[in-house]
Length: 105
Image 1: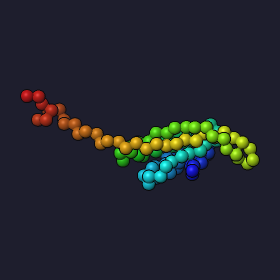
Image 2 (image 1 turned 90 degrees about the horizontal axis):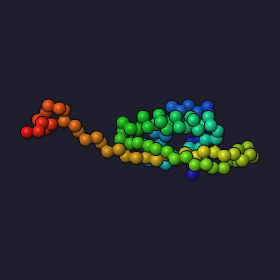
Image 3 (image 1 turned 135 degrees about the vertical axis):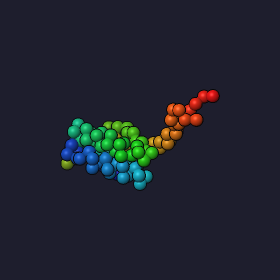
Image 4 (image 1 turned 90 degrees about the vertical axis):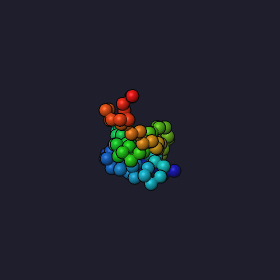
């Protein structure tokens, strides 16, 4: 499984663009972060990506898990974040007050 690797130096806006692009293409999105700063940037990216996607009728949520990874011959604990896609139903049209549809006879 492929992961977007997010570091503490990653730009949340750039990661958000990657998340939104993958979601629009129907590709599963998973991120991997090592360290608190990296997790912070990843969560900011998810929040920004939601702002990009909601107007298109798509919402996202995420779920974190722990994972042991080897970096430079050293075992480290990473946070892996799975992004889930939710389709949003279009809001029902609301008749303005005072219109014929909104008046009870």
